[in-house]
Length: 111
Image 1 (tube, helix red, strand yellow):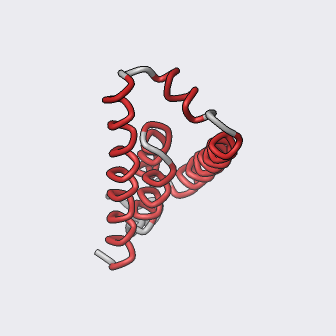
Image 2 (cartoon, one colour):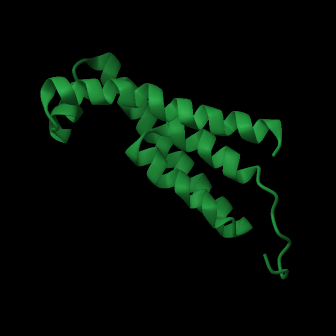
């Protein structure tokens, strides 16, 4: 496995663990309420700006993944979409880049 692919997988793992630490701590303190978390994301202009920044990045990543998956037929790339919306762009983007680095099978050949 190429070193860059391993680095992308490592970043996807970090992009899962680091944000989840904060999300789980917030849920522990405030209870499992998604609407409460959304309200917290919009606590001030700075956090609202960050939410919009990440939302637009997630939408762009999703569009890119869909276009690339249809073109390449590398269906594993679709894993990046739920990773992006359930965890965050910090997981979805490096996960997609790691999957994208996998060797592709030429069209018309089994495998």
